[in-house]
View 1: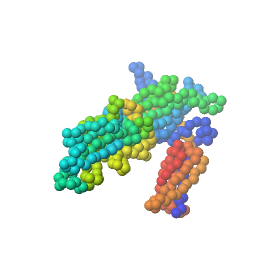
View 2 (view 1 turned 60 degrees about the vertical axis):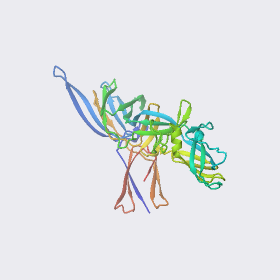
View 3 (view 1 turned 90 degrees about the vertical axis):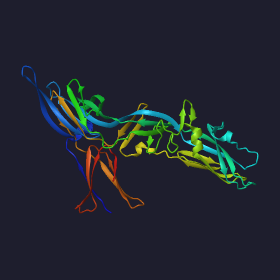
View 4 (view 1 turned 30 degrees about the vertical axis):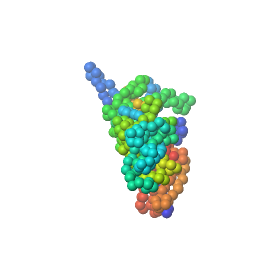
Amino acid sequence: MRIILCLYLVTWVRAKVIDDLPHCSRSTVMEGEIREYDNMGRPKIYSSVQLSMALHELSCMTIKTNGSESSILHTLEFLRLEQHHPVSEMYQFGIPKITSSCICDCAGGDAPCKMEQYNYKNCTSGTLCYRTYHPVQSNVGCIGEQKSEACCELRIEPFKDWIFTAIKISQPATILVFRYSIYDRFNKRWRKASEEVIEVPLNRGLSKFDFNGRNKIEMVVTGSRPNRELQPGMYFLREGTHEIRGYVPINEIGESNLEKLGWMRFSEGKWDIRNGNVKMKQAHHIIVADCKQQQYTSTINGEQMVLVVGNDIEESYDLGRALTSDPWIETAVYQGRDVRVEHAEGTSITVYMTSETRPHMLRHISQMESFDGLIQVDRDSNRYLNISFLGTKGTLIGNIFSSEKKDQIDMVFSVQGRSLASQM
């Protein structure tokens, strides 16, 4: 298969300026004027600019100072889209490693299994230990015809000494993060005079503030919530790591379901299973194959655990997957009181800017030094085109054709210059 790739570079300006400044995106712009009248009917005119921006775009405008010919360059960069999810509940837990040890007792013998010593009783070995009693078992290997009985100890310890923190998150606050910078001219080159990072809350739909006193610039930001969000619910991370995981059933703080993560808790320096005597008795089952030979099968009706019987080790737990495995999540960080999710995908926002001096918008040409491509075919005959762009600035728009005739476009794509590669 042969693929023809056509690329388009957007906008035009002298290349010399691009080397001295950050790359100014081709934002959609509307300009106008606002008139205010005082009590005497005298007008005061403000310039107004409306910008439509996408994630990682940077808008630039120049403003003349004090009526002189020298200009100040103002840049506004849409750095990040974040959502801050409050943490409403949390607890610590481990993966239970259960070692089962049982004795089968034929009827009429020394009676090592006594119901009063094993039924709903604790024992002392291991981090946690529970005893279970199982009457009416097989009498294979026994002399008489009466049924045998079995008694067991379940020693429970945290698997690999792992400690996890489970957190419950609520509906998020949506935050837009901008970087506002000012450049001035020095020795015929632009230099950065100041910089500040601005966090704009979006939950109320509109945010308004002043961000430059000298030129009296006012900014109003509005936009929609992102198309995809982290759903409220239970998530967790392992102690000593920062990777938040989910997409697996987790007990809430008031639950103790043996089929979900989090039924073995760590609190105040010790391990515990809520109502463990009853739960482990109900969950533990034993089937005796030969009482004399002490051959039996021991099982636990539960999940999210490791079961050890003799030399057999059965790992039956699921740690889900990391939140960052979703392509739309750039980072997910737990900060004690909240979980901060940075989106790899943005949302459409509109910025309204007013100033006493009319601004002039500045745009730069898109640039690209080179690119290379690779077509890969997997075992299922799916074809992937991997294109790497080098030395890029701005927006690259490409058409992909499957033949040199270029009579039919197979795919159209748009790539921001900050991305080093695109896969299709």
